[in-house]
Length: 150
Image 1 (cartoon, rainbow, N blue to C red):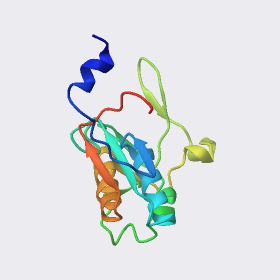
Image 2: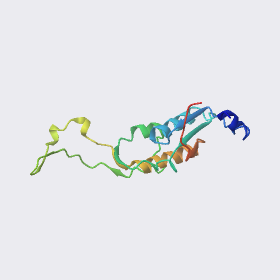
Image 3: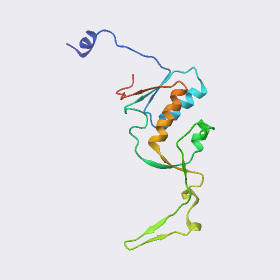
Image 4: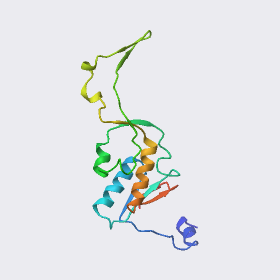
């Protein structure tokens, strides 16, 4: 018996049609789904996530510039985005076996200054993005790992 003949014994597969399928409910996947719904609320958008919920597999902390978040949601503070701790200072240390020496602020390149950024839990931000996506009508299916492109 061929694999197709075995599958045919169980009858037709259930199918759900979507305009857009996003694989992965990480920050990039959720931001994509959110932006698509903002551009066209009539699009049907689904996000497949292998974890138990958005952010379940994201454990790191990060320093985040809120510029991209402000492009998605200019009112991110009022919406309760979990960006609670602004960066209050930057230090670059030179480490040796015996000591640590601070680099003078004037010698630290501008790209290493985090003015206006926040220290965040990336998992918490991702979970919040999932809530915002669902509020816009994005369907999120946790516990679904994508296996192949159809």
